[in-house]
Image 1 (cartoon, helix red, strand yellow):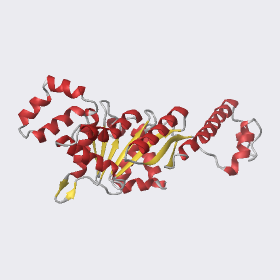
Image 2 (tube, rainbow, N blue to C red; image 1 turned 90 degrees about the vertical axis):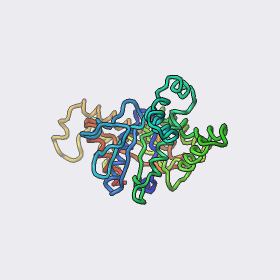
Image 3 (cartoon, rainbow, N blue to C red; image 1 turned 30 degrees about the vertical axis):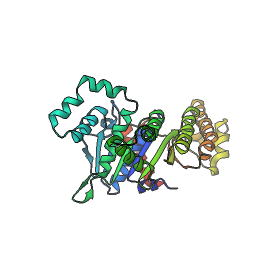
Image 4 (tube, one colour; image 1 turned 90 degrees about the horizontal axis):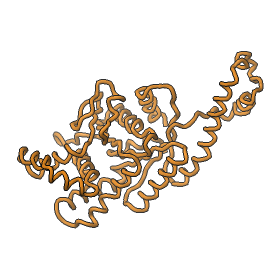
Length: 314
């Protein structure tokens, strides 16, 4: 399945183990969506956003701000989201701010399990439904969701809330959030991993938990930082050269490369072999599997550009 099929969904929920590159993948997806002419909102959920490192002249804020043509960004934090939600319930601005900043209210909300997930999900539901002049404000929203453990808690939360609360405003909003996440035409869940034991363990657990204990589905797995494949035509010559034999190409310059370089390439080849041995565990999940290349020695902005190209090429 081409990775471009992700753009059939208006809402992309991108998660993965910390350090897997999920933020870069989500940003690359947002960039490609914008390049396709879609008004796209890229959303982070963190106290330490990465947007300023990835995009020049962009300063992450709770309010959406323009990054580039057709691309906006925001940092979805819990405190301003609660204030905004209260401003809808209590349309007197001073009253809603007083409630949100009341120390007792803050203690109560901090003690409520899942409130830090439910309120942001409600904000995303609101943004997906926002319209101006009869048209959706956003053609697509790409969420750089929390890492696997917190993301799984977010995805479990709607059903947990509905098991406890059947009526009222909270139940109504939660059903609407649940309907968005369960709508496979509207929402695409993408999981980013690397071909290493622990990230794959977490990915397998996440996918199985989502499929077995929620009404949602993971649509794509993205295996990031895959070591390069030299191709089958050259493999025997390459292996012979790594072992110290002369290059079969007849180029004397190849024979003068020092042993340290051969050793380095040998380690890379061993890494690639190990990665390929682990990939079947992801294939067994029966979810579309894609690969993104390892890109060492370049800046995150350069990686972002190249990952955007990967979205175009797959």
